[in-house]
Length: 397
Image 1 (tube, rainbow, N blue to C red):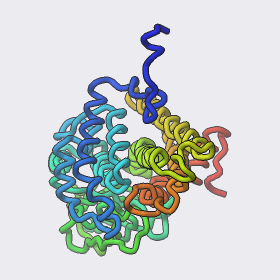
Image 2 (cartoon, helix red, strand yellow):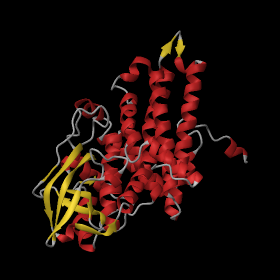
Image 3 (cartoon, rainbow, N blue to C red):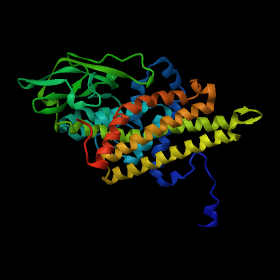
Image 4 (cartoon, rainbow, N blue to C red):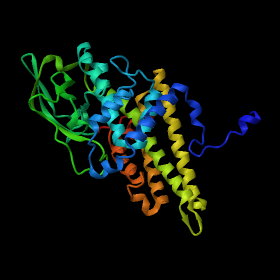
């Protein structure tokens, strides 16, 4: 090690020097999304959260499209064709602002657009993807049902043939973007297995009432989807997907973004606690000068940057085409769980101020309770890893 390198200053906000893992294009993507979040989200998100709404979702979608953040890891059709790592960096920066904003982008790009891009016909791709990449059309993804969350194989939504048409009947629940979507990717059981369908929001019999009274992801649109005999033409079905492998592959892509995003919420909470600890005085000095506070900050920093390093590793594997679903479960299980722990510890450092929306900590903590559950609960990811480790399936029986 040269003397010059040995004197590189320690950065409390990047203690492992993880920026060294990024090339100039990676940094440019990160900085673009960070600037967007700082200017268009952070000044307003506490008010949106308190009101329980995201009133500018359509404007934000178009602006996110303009910076290439929608479907950004997809190629063609106006998509950015970014690397998996760059997409992950964008998720981290968006969730550092708010989980609801990252959810908007994840559902648009990693679920709805990804499903069309991977399983759609050339005509379906041309019809929807360019407008979705530009944020002109918002999409949603209908898999979860009121009685079937972790067990999608039990879905009750049905699609039956009527001549050359399909007729869909059923309900979906906890659908991000549902009430503002122009198109819904809906998964339904058919006589040939589970299939995906593109349901325009103006289709007769389709409605998406918004879910209210949430204490988490309040700066986000969450809806129920109701399909009451929705008649669709034959070409509304996604031709490339039959069986649960289709929707599960979409979920895997979205979970990867969560691995990064959770660390954004954790970073925002850690940095709020660090700033507070160096400025808040008790007993005649900053509370950051006390051993117990320093121990908390040290533990938070270790888990935060371990999680970011894990996300980087999974991103490189995805870019290399070697990332396995079990490894994504590893990342989501660890990073969301640790992010919640970081938020809770940060709240203790802020004391009573930690519950105030003047600081981001409690907002991130409550948001992460949803992130912990969606795209696979803790228990489901534990069982995915358990099966991979032992070769024994504990999901059933």
